[in-house]
Structure formats: C-alpha cells, structure tokens
Length: 107
Ligand SMILES: [Zn+2]
Image 1 (cartoon, rainbow, N blue to C red):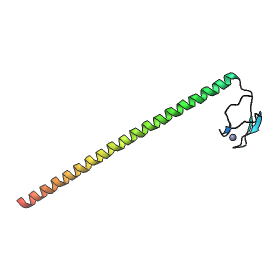
Image 2 (image 1 turned 90 degrees about the vertical axis):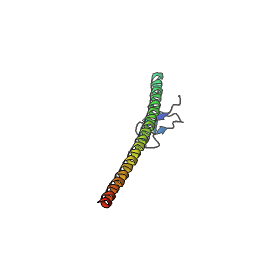
Image 3 (image 1 turned 30 degrees about the horizontal axis):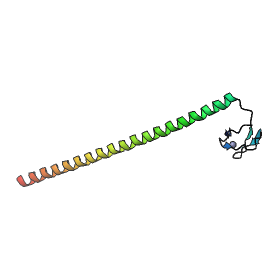
Image 4 (image 1 turned 180 degrees about the vertical axis):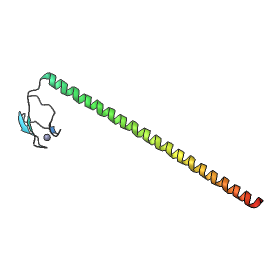
C-alpha cells in the first residue's frame, strides 16, 4: 500500500497511517476512518486540490498584505489631513487674536 498524506474528514487532522491499516481511529478526535484503495485519478485529484489550496492561500496572503498597505496609506492621509486642520485652526486663532488686538488698541 502506498503511503499518502491523509486528513481526517471530521477534524482535518493529519493522519499518520504508518501501519497501513485499512480501518483505524483518528488520534485527534477518535473519528473512525476507513481507507479505501485510491485510484490514480483520485490521487491526482487530491494533489490538484492541494495545489489549488496552496495557490489560494498565497493569493490570500498577498491580498492581506495589499490591504494592510492600503490601510497604512489611508492612515497617513488621515494624519496629514488632521495636521492641515490643526494648522488651519491655529492660523484662524492667530488671525482672530490679531483682529481683536487691532480693534482694541485702535479705537
Ligand atoms: Zn479527527
């Protein structure tokens, strides 16, 4: 019997089938697993599925990194906007203070 990496259909734990038994229990959840002889087509399908999952995971990681980048960029823009707003507020306050002083001492 060929050794293949198998996963428990119940808990997705990796099954160590070193003894090559056809029927055994999952060491993680105790689920009873029956191994049937896999046809070559099934093995290929399993491999294709694994590759697909790997690719999907890589794409997911990439997307997450991209989203993080956009988020940090947005934060930077927000900080810049806040800084501009604070500067504007300070300028306005200074202007009002000047006007107040001018009115006070020129009348
Ligand atoms: Zn299990």
